[in-house]
Amino acid sequence: MEVIKKKEGRFKEIAITVIVALLGGVGYLVYNNSTQSKDIEMKDAKVTEMEKAQAELEKEYYTALADLEGMKGTNQEMNTLIENQKLELKKQKDQISGLITVKGDLNNARVQIKKLKASADSYMAEINKLKAENEELGTTNTTLTKSNEELQVSVQNERMAKDELANSKAALSEEKRIVDEERTRLAKKVNYASVIRVDDISVKTLSVKDSGKEVKKSSADQVERLKVCFKASKNDVAEAGSEQFFIRVINPVGETVSSPGLGSGILVNNTNNEQLAYTLMKEVDYSNEAMDACLTWDTNSMNLSKGTYEIEVYNKGYIVGKSTFKLK
Image 1: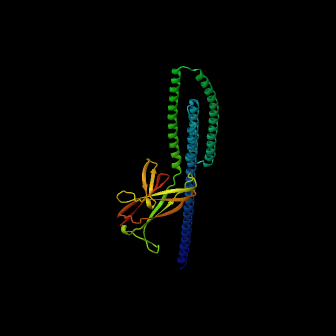
Image 2: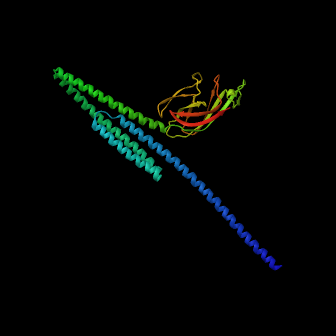
Image 3: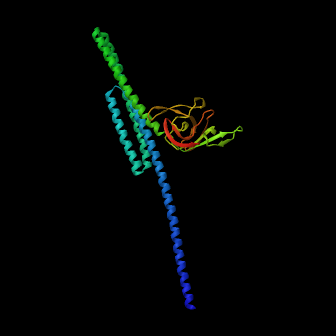
């Protein structure tokens, strides 16, 4: 009997030891899982900040390029100076991108972004000063040219002067065209960075009773109203204020469901400059934060067909979301 009691006591000791070990293991796993979750959250937050810093950098850089391009003219020395300044800005931009994407040094990157903007402002001040000096020289040259023209009595010389003037105008016109094209290209890049993406696009197909109550319907011949909802994403590059979202409802045969009398119209796809019909437009008050938006479109007497419909959402001329829905 005493031997049995000793064995039972020994068994209890072993059981208690095993239970304590298991509890310790479980505790460690819980702690380790919690730590890993916090690490993931911190990494996600850092990635978001990195993307925000990169967007700020792109905006400052391309704005500076557009301003510098706008200062170009017929003075070759000034144009060369502007090209050198653009190269210096490119070096600064690449170094800051390295701080953001390689080293993850966001604090230093933001300091350098401010320095880049200061450099751009300094370049513009230098160019404006040179431009003013050139204008003074131009005034002097104009006076001398006028005096010289008064001395010219030859018809041949007068014709030569007219030919030179025509050639200069043609050269200026061509340079202006090139500058305008470059400015437009750079402006599109800045505009594209401010495009607001959308997701969670949903479509409700409804009929409306005399009381005004909406009832879900899935048959094409019973649908009287479409309700489109989506979530606009956060974009710190975009300016806060009124934003327009254009909705295209495309029927099973590829045609846009539209009616000018019901709010439909035409938009330009900035990707290829193609004109596209849209079904309806929603204007929202955007504050750079993610937000939900819904809009309704009454089909009235329009006959909807059976099949799969596509939904396309556009902002600033770019497609920002897609979805589909079916009617029986």
